[in-house]
Length: 156
Length: 103
Image (cartoon, rainbow over all chains, first blue to last red; front, side, top):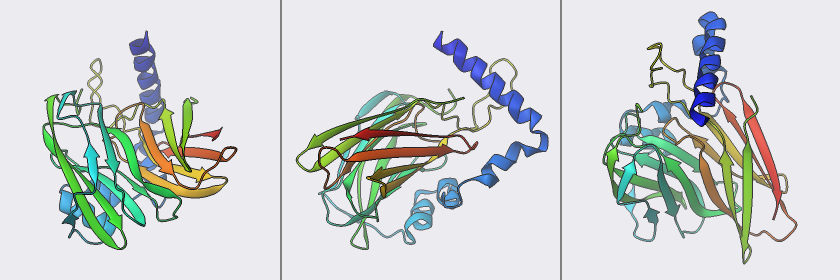
């Protein structure tokens, strides 16, 4: 049942896109201006980190905890939790080293009011290291964990 | 197509954990339709912002590598019972949604 509605939805979606004709690529251009496209398009982890934080030099910090399954059966849903009990956390980014574009998601907390915690679910193409980059007090801190993936989640 | 946005809050001390679930396909743009062989256009959430009593406390950027029906959680400091937390999101095809909850 679910699958059927999903397929119908996709078909309707592509029909709309075709109707938009040459506008196939426009949605990307219309986007919220401040979505860091460069960082999401970057093909290497270091590039993505520098596009996001301006520098890619980061120090490992054992206080940061990255919680992810050691073995993920299904790469399309890998829960990742980042707990960074540091002062003045400004942002957290989650990177998957072996994905075509390593940056999965990032969060900006420079407004204050949120503690260094971010939990999400990501897709992973293959077994890879998952690294969290935490910016706190003007410095970059990292922590990582390797996740083994049995079935990849990119391509379905 | 309106997409369902669910929000749940849990208060511990003065911190609130905010859990957000959005019903969203999160298409990467890489997958092919098995019937037509055409690529399914990318469709994913890009921005998600969290506001406490109207003031933005965190803004997340999501990429195509976030799972479908994304479940996201953050912790908001300095909250008390009765505060309102609002989450709003927008995707790359111009769709958006929001949900609000009281702590």
